[in-house]
Length: 390
Image (tube, rainbow, N blue to C red; front, side, top):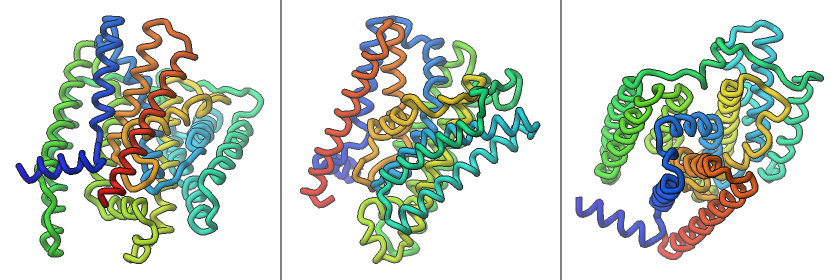
């Protein structure tokens, strides 16, 4: 235990801040808004907040993959819009089964991201320019799909609408927490066994057990809060489930380790035998797949898709959430939890401002300040890591 604590303290001194700054900031935001309006932490308001952050949070989760390799995807919002438009058109106009339409939307999103990734990794087109072009092109395709009507409604009682408008009993949260603990325990043990087999030094397991316990405790606590209102929003349960799944993948799978290696030093990863182009293409494909599913949740919540779906501040909030949550802009550093934490910060600021009847201008200013502060912290931490050689 002393070794683990000492390792963690050494990491903090060398710039390994982890989620600490954003957690402290989130606590301060909650305290300030609760003092200003005692409804902020009420079960009803937290229920509404969870509905507001789920769809954009899923998009932010996809952005994490691209930021992990030190790149950016500006087309994520447009991809969420065009795939959700295609889904609704297939379901409403052509009578496709809603589940099949949702699956096809996610597959289409993955294909779009794979296209971006192949062009980027094979031809060397800068990701900023490539995905900016994608943003414009896919917005145009979305307008063509929707046609002259500009908006298409979905049935209130259909499967798609149920994704964001269903409240589940509290025991679902307890089941999710239990499943996560079991899967995490298995992953920790398998990882330790694999490292022993290959003659590698074992990672300190205490930190992994602590993170697992904290995540499970948070899920149970959130479940108890929502139990006092309508239950657990299905969209939030899906979002948290995806966060936990992606975190396990990043931490314990070969692909996760290769993603970190490519983001940390692409040339070193190539010399180590990692197929860098394949990893980069997969990162863009996953980003767009998550963007597509985020678009599905957005349509579910609003009961419609329109020309502005995936537009406005969706992309900016998704990128800001990943960065504010702790994913480094320099690549090689980040967790799935960063999408959740960052989205909570952005959602809490927006929700709190609405309770205080503040204007959109004030919300944009505050969110911008928080984002810049997160980037400054990331830049300082990156500089300290380079100095310490970590």
